[in-house]
Image 1 (cartoon, rainbow, N blue to C red):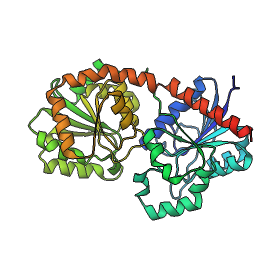
Image 2: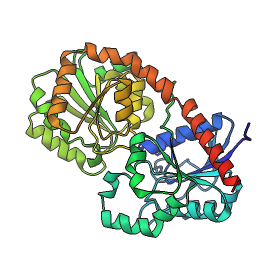
Image 3: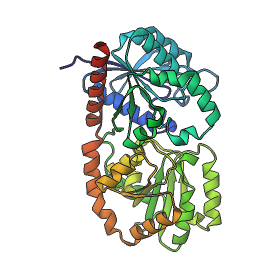
Image 4: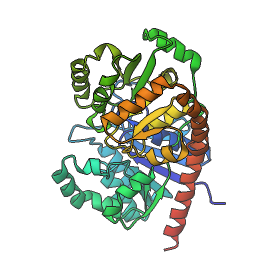
Length: 396
């Protein structure tokens, strides 16, 4: 039996900065899961996205759900500039058995990788999809220059690279990284994410949505990457059917205005609703109130919202660019289509007109999530990889 590990998670943004998307939730849940297993877990992060919480102590350790977290003050500058994080990891890297760095293209990451390398502490890097093809197509020249200057050092000197899905691993093979590669999916708290049928009825009523209305749902930030512009095209031929499209999430890049224009041009505005991002505590009811969760992303290294929806027994329709699409198709817990509007029109029409197809996947989807994605299981998997990496490092 390996000793209790002393683990540092190093991430630019952390819970409860939910507006930054999936990694904030998945990393915080992983840290809490590792702590529940008896490991000593610390987090170095910034206070980015937490300005609305003035009571949050900065630059000192606080205990959050069993995890030691230090929120360092973000300072002005390009990206997330947080000298306190960098100084702390430089001073303390050798204290830890392993350091887990989440995110690439992050201004803060280089300090952790250099400190770990120089002080002999093995470290893991989680790209979280940021080394995938979609990311490289955004500001390509700048990314190539930055990769050669900084990021190549970070990933090539890592003891291992952590991927969240088979798709993400395959997409990064072209980089020919010398590091060990392993897959551990994002986990979630299956006690929290579960059907909330009574709360779902209340939510529908609060939104003036009838019991017989077929609700299509998308949760998450509104961004070009999510491929939401496919939905007006897919739904236009279905305007005479009884459906409602609900978006829950903040607007990242002007996508909301573009979608509103597209739905208006298709004469669908009366069937579409945009709601602001909400706290995670509200989401089980919303997932449970929906008939079908839709995610037509251009790229998604994993897709936390997919697992959340399935845990709440909300059937899913996703694109073949979502990281979990192979696993979803193989397990028969949802529907996968290419990013062709006509295919989505056909699939949605069939599911609206044949609701029994939705019912057949609900129980299977919940069981699949409990078996594969529970926090306990994914945390155990991650800890086993940490132990293997540390042993390999110590044997050198």
